Length: 248
Image 1 (cartoon, one colour):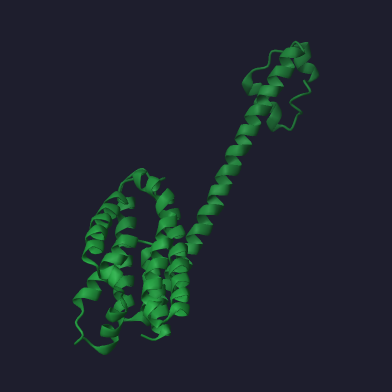
Image 2: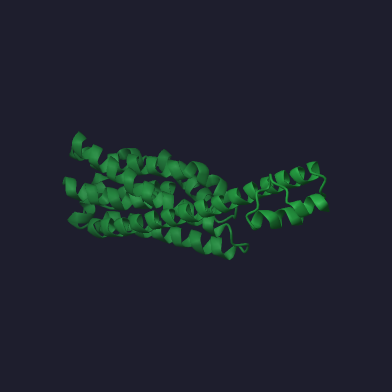
């Protein structure tokens, strides 16, 4: 296979690995075994490009078990979020390995390029997937989790099939998935920083209220927590008790 086609397949399969890494390896391995040499040349050539390390029956059996487990656990709220702490960085590794395998027949230089393409596309999609998983965990009902997860299942299937049947389409879909993943990641980071900032401000105000109350007690005042918060909200220095508090 020419380096261009290998690169297109690496982008498509890498994007699929960013969603479902084990399923991606499983689907590619099955395609490499099932597609005969009598198939149309473009499809047969793509199937021949799939390395033996992926079509190994033991690899397929292990990936089948892991793919079923991942797809099931991904639909369970909070448990899927715990999985993301490791999976978000594991998926790019799978993308890189698949990319290297696809480009290995075209030379070391091509394998390095396809490995980078696979890792990069998987990383962008993986970050977006993790962000979306975290966002949907905020919703109390489980339907949203199932819908999100099923869409990711279907997306990974489409990307893998396109990588074998129509590499150009796979690359285009992969680039679109990468763009969506990057945007989701940026949106999540922005929301996270906003929440963190709000939480931090709340802690600061709580500490300031405690300082205000201690200062008023030391000055002979007996202000309540509510009064202290009102003073902080009005911009009064919490360490400087007002005269009214002293007279009270």
